Length: 280
Image (cartoon, rainbow, N blue to C red; front, top):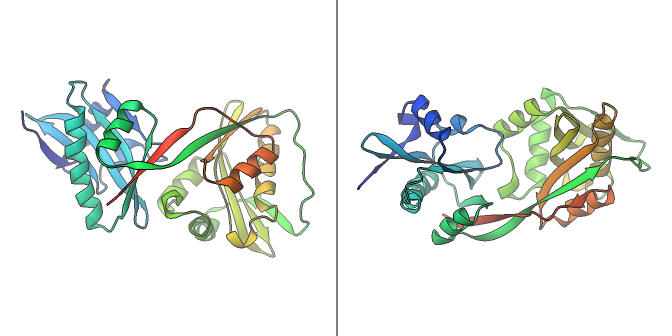
């Protein structure tokens, strides 16, 4: 039976939310924004049949030229591959119209990986998770000229500039995402050298666990202990209030980050998540 594709921005948000909350086949990206906050963005579409939602997809831009598959939900009626193909085709057109050149997606499930491969996505990287159980934090000998202080909203322009300089396009966050991370983090700090912001971190916490959500250092200052001191300060800050377990994610290809976390005592878990990409 034929179905039509419509922009989520043209549909009642209550119907979309109801579908998201149903027991459908679903994938949600690691995202600071909730799915309903994506409804108004270009690249968010619904498959409709006889006035009923059959599937939803959001593939929206993050940085200049780069977009991510944010979510895909489909009814468990055996037709999810057809919905995925039609929704992705519409999303690709919308993304191309606004200048996106690449679309990335996590592939944590076999069924999603098969769908992505069928659309021409190729392996691009892996997301790795590292954990640290706090017993004793060994402080390094810090540069006396390096100052760590709490981040404020006034630092966001500098934070955004560092983010753009430090990350490849696929891993950059735009200002709205950085602000969302800032407001949801439990501890956010910046590193200053001679009065200039040269690095930052933002971390979340829940009960006795904390997660290093974002860490970046100006490339001009990388390899000089800035990232090490930012993470040390984060560990010390949370440890002082009883947090004992820490986690962080990074890319398997980011050797510098992996080396930093290993030097601090983080250990890599054996549950990498495949990252796939498609040229638009």
